[in-house]
Length: 218
Image 1: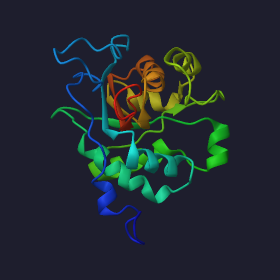
Image 2: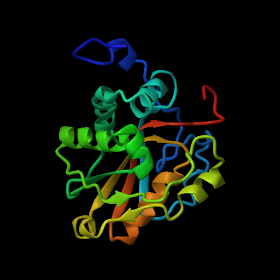
Image 3: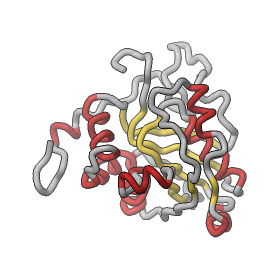
Image 4: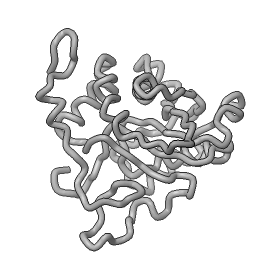
C-alpha cells in the first residue's frame, strides 16, 4: 500500500470517496433533492453545530481505519489526518481546541494506543491547534459496531467524563471533537454533551470517514 517513507501510495490516497450530495449543511448526511430536513441530526443537542468528515467509509478508507485501529498500523495516522486538517473551518475570531474521543481503559491496554488521539495530535500539529485530552471513558461497554441507532445511543449515554483540570481550559472555547469514523453520531453526541456541560461554547464533530449504511455503495 505504500513504501518505506510513505505508508500509503499516491494511488490509494486518490481513491478516497467523496461524500455524496446534496447533503445536510449541519451534518453532511445525504438529504433529498429538494433539500428536505435532515433526519439524522434533528435530535442532536444545540451545542453540536456541525459534523465534518474527510471521506466516505468504504474501500481504501475503510481499510485504513481498520489497519490503524485493529492492526496497530500507527504510521498511517498522518495519512488520515491530512485530509481531516483540510476540512477544518474556523472563524477569524475563533480559538479552537482539539479533543480526541477517548477509548475505554480495557481497550487502551489491549491496543496500546487510542486512534482518535493519534489523529488529533497530527491535525493539531498541521494546523497549530492545541490538543486537550479532556475526556475519559471509564466504563467498559459493548462495541458500537453492529448495534442499532437506539442501541448505540444507549450504549454511550453518560459514558464520558470531563476531567476537572480541563474544564477551565475548555470553557467558552469551540471544540473540534476528533474521532476516526462517524456513523449515527451517537458517540460524538454523548461526548459533546459532556463537553457542553463543562462550559464548552460549541462542538464540531471531526472524523476521517463517514459511514453511510443503507445508501448505495455502503
